[in-house]
Image (cartoon, rainbow, N blue to C red; front, side):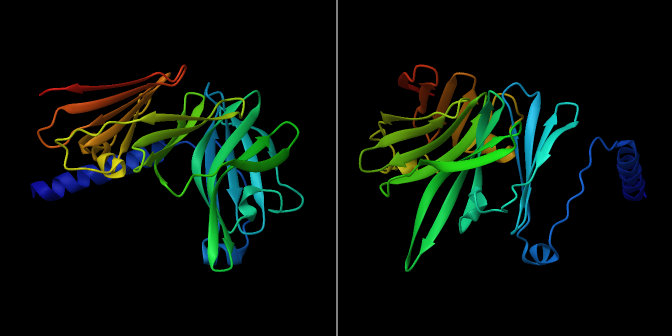
Length: 266
């Protein structure tokens, strides 16, 4: 009987929460039926560092709509390029949204894109610039990662965007960054792997890295992972906990890009 009473209580709470929800914004979307069947429709979100505005992109396989909202969920600008996807990042064979940043009224979205060729394919990291005032969209190659490097994590917040790679041959950590003005930069750091570690490759040493941002509550998967990247304004800290070895900490100042490695003995 207790189980049934608990179930009824949960259902009542769900219904109460459902009725308490309030619609704050709506936008009519006319996606092609074929796109829905092939699951080619998608959406992408990017907020400016101050949190006062955010850009929402809605697209299918024929067109994309760019929507600018303020923090009160009021639609300030919307447009769709007249030539469809031809001049957008969605004109590539495939793309994966990684994050981005914004500044001076423009939004910079970063994608990992694939350009398929005969018996081969090239992978690029492309930046699409969206100007909601002039209602213009442009995109360009942001950087191309060497085949010796492996992408371990990408994220954006606090006015900056980063893709971080690891090079096993050089034992090198490389930061591919983007600032709020849409300017890119690359920084490299040599990382020491302890001799007591059973991981000989840097990619293995940093495997399954989880992001913990100072403005969000981490999930259970991130909290229990052995390798974590803590991101806060002006600082990146990577912690590695491997068996009984001392905890390794890598600190990177994202303002002057000073680098520090240290260990904490248990």
